[in-house]
Amino acid sequence: MTLLEFDAVTKVYPVRGAGHITALDDVSFTLRSGQTIGLVGQSGSGKSTIAKILTQLETPTSGEVRLDGTPIPRRGAALRAYRGQLRMVFQDPFASLNPYHSIRYHLQRPLRLDHVVPKSEEDDEVRRLLERVRLDPEVVIDRRPHELSGGQRQRVAIARALASRPRLLVADEPVSMLDVSIRLGVLNLLADLQREEGLGVLYITHDLATARHFSDEILVLNQGRVVERGPADDVILDPQHPYTQELRAASPDPDAHFASASGIDGGAL
Amino acid sequence: MNDTLLSIRDFSVVYDVDPAVQAVRNVTLELRRGEILGLAGESGCGKTTLAYGVQRLLKAPAVITNGSVVFHDASGDDIDVNALDADEMRRFRWDKISMVFQGAMNSLNPVATIGSQLEDVFEVHRPGLTRSERREAVVELLEIVKVGAQRYRSFPHELSGGMRQRVMIAMALALRPQLMVMDEPTTALDVLVQREILKQISALRHEFGFSVIFITHDLPLLLEISDRIAIMRNGEIVELDTAERIWTDPQDDYTKTLLSSFPRLTGEKGMVLR
Image (cartoon, rainbow over all chains, first blue to last red; front, top):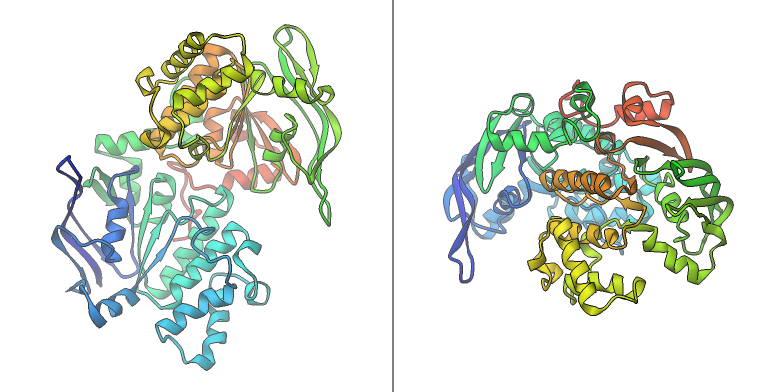
């Protein structure tokens, strides 16, 4: 089922004294429920502009964004209802949680603001959310963010995003600040939750390796334009566009590095 | 000239808090001249504590409880790092061992030009130089790291993240040290910029012959850039071998776990259960 449509979206920012820059240039894609689309590209390629448009921090210069076939409302109750459908997971779990508040508070707030459950059931719902992200409620519920590891904090951020029962999750580099060894755990968790809840996920990253493993489809953005798109394996393993090839060549790839039996200065580096 | 640059023996560091944390346990390591040694391991495994500890850069509550660090200088002298007094230590640092810090993009002074910040290095460590000699040296450095002399009067905010990182490398290179310690030098950069910086580090290493201790938790990256890799866990080195042997024939179970825990760009799929 089609969840989200970007239809020829263009975003132009005016630049003082220099005319304007085109942050997004005629971008179109369709995201279905239960599907993950990876948006890859280097800094400044327009990935985050897409997230900003979705969260209504920016409005497109031209083109249209539709959720369930309806254009994103601009104001009022309709906009609030739209926002309830969409949640973000940010890059830095150290900055995105409030150091003054307990984990319980972080999860209670969205429940209360979005009237997810009656007040009497709030505590049970908080515990259920923590269990869903594989955290032990008894251990973490009364702790503050600084008492948790980076991976645990990111799980709390995910639980908070899920609290309002969204249908669309925008994950902007959700694992790039985490140790390589726990990235997979967090991505696997996101994949599980997505399957269980039929979430549509936009995965924004510049890491091609996790994009390949985590996404169904990948869009490669360069200077606001989609230069390549297709099933994840096709795009990463057999890139057609020179820019995708360049990204691929720059990404660490021990399999290829040692297969070519090159020393440090030969081959890839 | 000896082939070994740095000999670390039975090096231990304890964080003297309650309860005490043994951050580095009896590490013995020989760093060769001109090699890139990767230090890998999860957060809290002691890799940063070890690299800072050998330069005595740790602050209380960290205590070096045991071990010796001997620096085999290119001049033929052996320097016992633990025996240096405060003044000797100050001259030793940056002159023999320099650092590129974690989050280096933000470690430049925002209100001073990069030229003047680079000049500071020479002002402190090479007081004999005249003003024009200092300026000349800075211009040369900016050219070496391909930032360009025209950036001399730029402020850090006028440079991109990659450029700022190059300035940090220029600063570390200024006194032609024999060892550079790099702590997550490319973590905040995107892949294309990261690759350029790594190429540059590798090229400079050949040109100037310094050794590198490269700390990161990004194992795929480390496997490509390092000559040898030390895998650390709980303050101990569990395995130390060439990058190729770590990749093709890991001995320790923990190394195997680490290697299987990152998503492969082109290798087998199946780690993310989709």
